[in-house]
Length: 167
Image (cartoon, rainbow, N blue to C red; front, side, top):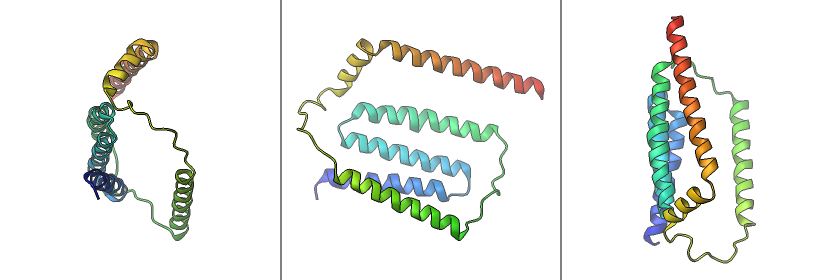
């Protein structure tokens, strides 16, 4: 087993562990930290795939910004940590059947996957290639996304101010 396979096994195990912890932990803040573990391990997987730009974006956007937004959302809302659904055998069975169907579907999708000839220059200077594509061919969608994010930010501020005035 070479180092790349070992890194893949370790990072994928951490991603799965983070997902399992997120589902099984009781405190919401601990759940967010488990999601951060999953995000960081996915960034490591992107690095092993020679997608450094996507890995950095994964760390900056998801591990940083989205996680902080989740923590602020938790802190600013009222929640009762004792509200938990009870596990019933029917529900557990349906979840188990869903998991089995999902894994069978993924297995057959991977098994029947067609690999074309390898691209030799795909990972060479991929950040530069992404920058050239974004700022030459996709400038308008890039700017529209920034306008939508600005509108969402202004809307969130207006909604927060209205709730403060009502209280």
